[in-house]
Length: 460
Image 1 (spheres, one colour):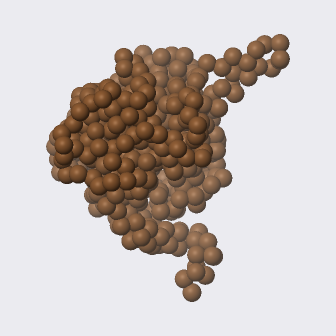
Image 2 (cartoon, helix red, strand yellow):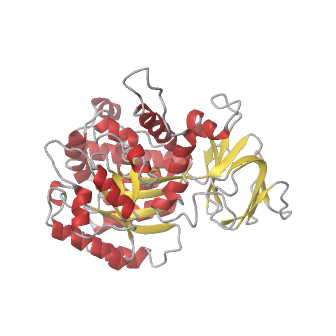
Image 3 (spheres, rainbow, N blue to C red):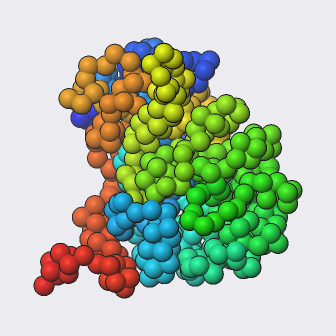
């Protein structure tokens, strides 16, 4: 039980929680049990029985729900958290991609991905798409994968190019062929916690021929594609999605990130070709990518997923993204006159779905995760409701979306394995990892010439 020991039996019974299944057929289920056997959910219902040696978790005063799915995070930036807290997109490109990113050693990528994945797990994110565009050498890629694997998170490693302007400014460089080695070495099976995707550059960032090459490479490898589109950069006029359509490259295997400056016609193309979308509302408004297109996507039947993007500028938790997405889209329904009623359509339940099942769909994992459904993988989180910032509970969905934060994430399962329990990550030597993360920060910022004086003075 909570407060007791964890048993070695591969069965766990979560007792008496308020279960938000996010499964439309099952709905919300108060005073309900969830039975996990091995990596899967075996049953959901009241008064379930388990073997005598099962691990039993008392979930009274807990909300039991699917883990969050972050569909786009540049996890490699974890060691420089908060380095650009009020930057523009132009400043991010020059400060991060053209300066700090160039300083990365493979060992920095490893600790970044390990600690970034642990951060995600600590906040209830059980699936992460790691949009990795710091693959300056093959060793950098290997280190990124090893960091994710050690954390135990479910992840899609989206392999991108190295940093540097030559790869992003109408580049004629094709995606590195090393992705073929990575596919063969680490991703022989599509039925594992770690999966592979292509972190592709849109046409405009590359020549049309390079875009065509990269999309065909991904499809030859049988992996999904994730691409940034529609970001507003000073003096740049490119219709990324329209050009992809002209090249005949759009399809249901592609997730389009941001879409903030994409035209209505381009969003129609995403919908008609079966594509998915990832919105990062906090960073999009902070850096000036453009207005998050949440409602515009929904109007076309494209349910967006949510993503963190960069912890170098934004918080790394899904609670912030859900709340930002909710209020940002609702204010767009504001009228110019009090004679017309304020009539927003997006709700708190919508954004909870964006953060769970819609994220699973964007990763083509909705058959495995995203809802609490018997037969699916047991990616489950428990949210405490007996703490001052969330009690008392009236609407459990509102408790998660409006009130909760990472401190309320009590227990985290990935594929039936407990990775956080009683509010603490398990089997993690945090002191050692934090020391290594600080060392990476010091190296990167020193070599980039932007290390704060207070850090230098602390060394003396």
